[in-house]
Image 1 (cartoon, rainbow, N blue to C red):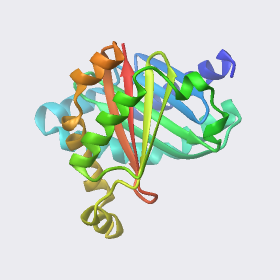
Image 2: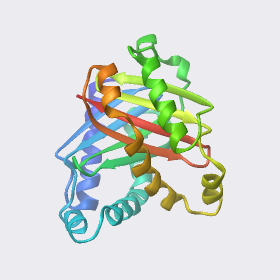
Image 3: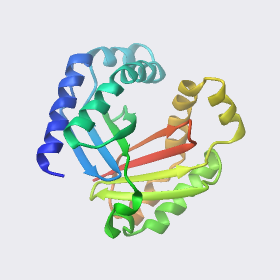
Length: 226
């Protein structure tokens, strides 16, 4: 897709966030590579959020931002669809509080086999999958299926299917998705061996993000590389 599409999405997302948060990200990087679109937000922390982090807790910050994002998700979906001319089924997002960065990404209505070989078969893929399987099994259970995609030189996405254990499935059915998401974010990030991944990728990991499709038992990990 043309660069004008990326810049159009970036501009519209920046305006949306400035309107609703009182401050937008310092920079926004949009990557369009079917079946994914990623929107990487750098230095995005509103003044009121800084107060929340200082006076209350990281958990409160996550709860507040997730509440706002639920309101904004339909608008983000519309922005991506209108600018890129694609069908977006679901929006995912996560935050790196220590770096004040964030990710918004969408899985498009597109078949995986439309991607290029370089996109799917990147260097060190086997070692990356071994590590993703290891920490996923430790946190939940071994994925039934694992796929990963190197969208560009700086963005790696992994997609895991059938990973929730019975207690997680029960919490989801009982309506505790928000609490489960907040807990799993912290747990999964703590289990990932960043040093090993950086050694096999031969790149530093600037940020890592996680999110889930609880209804369909799918989990994502997004690595932003330097």
